[in-house]
Length: 136
Image (cartoon, rainbow, N blue to C red; front, top):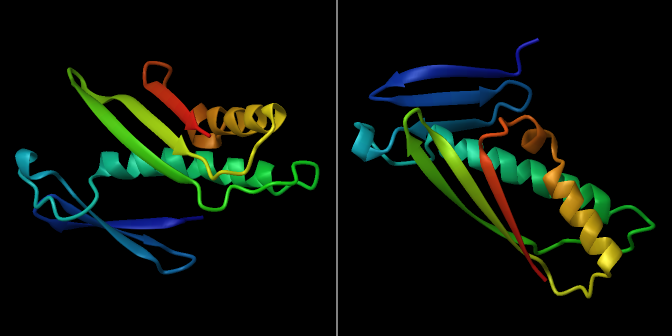
């Protein structure tokens, strides 16, 4: 069953619609590559997908009764580095600014393992470097 419908809008722009909710998003190619550069690029969405997957799994760990904590207010900053040949994402640096919740060492290990083992993270090629930094 289809879940996303993507339509090419011209001028290197796409519109994707999440069919269940009707939510739409637009992508542009960067100006330096001939696009309009007015919104997320496809590789920006790729990075956002990775981070959203990591944070969602971390949230699932944090809401378990035995965890007795939360990650509300977590802020995540990301940087992507591109390689030229082949033109692709070479590295994603993900920096987690954790809320000040006095996490135990066990909680920290559980949160970090969740991020490293998210569905999207585990779906990526091994040659994509994922650098994770946790600031507690």
